Structures are given as structure tokens and as C-alpha cells.
Amino acid sequence: MKGGTLVPWVVSGLAAAVFGWFSRRWPDDWDGVGFVLAVHDYDLSRFRPHFPGYPLYVVLARAVAAIGVSPAHACALVSALGGTLVVAGLCAVVAGRVRAWWISAAALALPVLVATSTRVGADTLALGWFVCAAALALRSTRGLRATGASGVCLGLSLAARPGIAIEVSPVWLACCAFAVCTAVDARDRRIAIRSAGIATVVGGLVAGSWLAWPIARHGWRGFWQLGHTHVVGHFGSWGGTLISDDGPSRGASFVRLLVYHGLGIDGSLLGVLRGCCVIGLALLGAARLGQRPTRFIVAAIVCSGLALFLAQSVGAPRHALVPAVGLALLVAAGLQHLASASRSRAAIALVAGGYLAAWPAIPLLRAQRARPPAAVRAIDAVRNAGDPRDAVIFGGRNARFAELVGVAAFPFTWMGEVDASLERANRVPSQVYVTDEVAFRERARGALRLFTRECSDDLPGRIEHCVTVYRYDWLTRTTPPDQTM
Image (tube, rainbow, N blue to C red; front, top):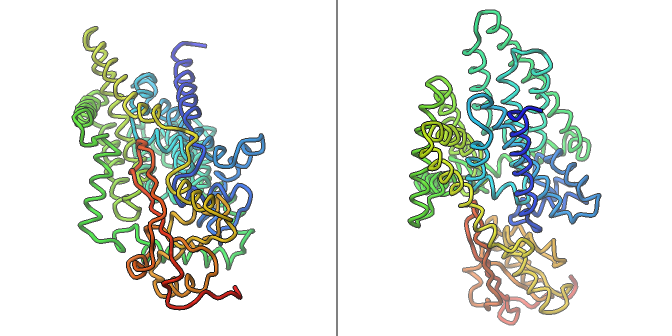
């Protein structure tokens, strides 16, 4: 095997080792709890997971869990597989232009990629298959086999996370357009157009075949109702889009998402220097790749970022993955351009690449991989305070973690159900606790007593937060508890 062929495999193996070793043992958000519970109980109506079901991700997690791994760790290991596919796919996308070593340095330098590749979530798996599909689409003129493989990878990407279509659709169009524009003659141009159409159709068929599982599980009508509820909530009461959110605050969150999780500028001096280094290397990379490739990469970054701003939650760092990976291509090209000039510049490039790659890994080395997130620790304190069968938690997303530790919960009270939540709390004969995010906290302040407060680890790609749990004192309730419940 030639050295040029061996290096991408070595780089991908290194990424797999890093992501697998630092994979988390617990979910750290609402969606993650749903994925973990879906390993044993796949039910979209109970948000295990939420619509549209993520069938490929759940199937792979079940396969890993079958060998004796805990459900949460199995989900995180599937994410590590996705991160490995991202690195391998990027090496294939720029094969012949940028060396794999620089690709690995730039990819591992992304805080959001390191974080999502070590946590519970389907984002990296979907993006990894898509990057492989894009790499094959750029080679579609080489034959029908590459075209078919590109379509299969595209379908697997959508089967892992159907919602990724919002972010990668403009990138897929850019890849197909680049393949057409770089064709050497009219014949190759026709082949590229035909191949793009075939790959898109094959991708749709593959994704549709995987979605047959959740459709069969809930029926056509049930699946449609779940989808309608999800879309209405996403664009309405739940928030997460330009239509449902406040414009100025959403813009500020979007800028923070790109600056902190895309460029790694965290407010410290080292963070600012790192951001400047990323921008400088990206500009060098643009000059290295040439006008046409740079134009398509920049267009893909801008279009995916615009799709993110319009139709995705800008408070979730994982949604910055697609534009961040596009930026990594330019950074890798910049590192190689710097290294190829002279030995002294090669040393500078080596130091810069090592620094960029080590920056997000340092917090990971400090973090306790086996330590549960703040919400789990807070709810676990409730369980340890007495008989968990005598406790119930009212709250929003954090209350969902109670399902992992065996405490009863009403996790939907954050959706504006103020009066209904108070009425239910007053009728519960158990020890009642509420999280700090519930809608009725202000109204019930007179009945609240501070119980515990836990804070999350400072992991890259995540917003550090604390979870507070209050005891809801039934002696000050307006009505006595209903002993018949």
C-alpha cells in the first residue's frame, strides 16, 4: 500500500481513537435522553426519540449496546463513528489538494466537532455519511459505481438524522454544481448532471426505506400527526426558528454560536489568538485552493449558515457543524500552504496545527468522562433524599432526566401550562420538586425551598449551565394533596 493511500487511514484511525476514548457515558440534553431510552423502547409518541425518529442512529446504537455497552455509551460510540466518517470524508473531498495530516489537525481543532463526536446525538453520524456522499459526488464522472455509492451515503445521512437536510441541501447543490462546472467537456458535463440526479433519487429511496420503520411503528396517520405536532411546535410554541424567536436576540445568539463554537473565540486571550489564527489560515487556504474551489466552499458555508439562522435552533452548538466543517477545509489548505513555503514556515505550520488540534482536547482531558451531567446529579439527589416512589419532579427539559434515574416526572410543564401545572402539583401526594426552568416557578415562589444546585462540566462545544432543583412545600399549597391519586 502506498504511503499516500495509507495516511488517510492512519488519520481516520487516530480520530476514531480520540473520539472513542473521550466518549461520554451519559446524555447531556433533552434529545440525548430520548436517544438513550430509544435503545430499549422505540416510541416517537413518548419522544424516544423525537420525530422523525433517527432510525439508522438508533439501530447502530442498539447493535453496540448488544455487546454489553450501556445504552448511553453505545449512543456516544456511534457518534464517535460519525466523527471518524467526517474526518475520512474530508480527506477524500480534498484528496490530491490537501494532505490528510492537515485535514486531521483542522478537523480536530473544531470545538463543535470534538464535542458532538463524543456525546449522545445523531449529528456527526449524519454529517459523516453526507461528507462521504459529497466526496463521491465530486467523482461521479468516473462511473456508475461512484454515483450509486454517493446516493447510498446520502440516504444513510438522511436516515441517521432527517433534519440535516435543512443544513446540507445547499452544500449538496454546491457539490453537484462543482462537479458539472469542472467537467472537461460537454460529454462529462452531461454525465455529471445525470449522476447528480441519480444520486439524489437513490438517496431519497434509501432514506425512505429506513423511515419505513417508524412509519410501521406508528402507522401513517400517527406518523403524520407526530410530524404535524413537531413542525407546529418548532415554528411556534417551542421556538428555534426565525419565525418563532425574537429577531435581535436570535441574531446575537447566532453570532455567538459562530464566534465561540466555529472560531473558538471564548473571550480569553488565547481564544482570541486562536480565532485570529483560524481566520488567517482560512484566508491562506482560499489562496491555496484557487478561485473556483474557494468560491464553492464559501458559498456552501454561507448557504448552510443562512439555513441554520432561518430554520434551526441557534442555541444548540451542534447545529454549527456544517459551516464549521467547511471552514476546516480552508484552514487545512492554509496549513499546507504555510508548510510548503519553507522549512521555517513548515515548523510554524506544525506548531499552529498542533495548537489548534490540542485546544479543544485540553478541556476534554480535564473533564470526568464518567461523571453524569448536572441535571442527572440534581435529580439523583432527589432520589437519594428518600424513597424515589414518593417523589415527583415538575419541570422542562431538565426534568426529562428523571426518566434515567427512576423518579416520576412531568417534563412538559415548561410549555406555558402554568395553571395546569400548579393544579397537578397540588393534587400530587408525593414529595414535589420543581426545576429552575418551569413556567410556574415565579407564581409558586412562596412555596419553593432551595434543594440543590449542580453545574455542568466545561466541555468544548457546549454552553456551561447550572441546574437548580427546588422543593415545593405542600403545606403552603392552595389545596391539600389528593390522596386518591
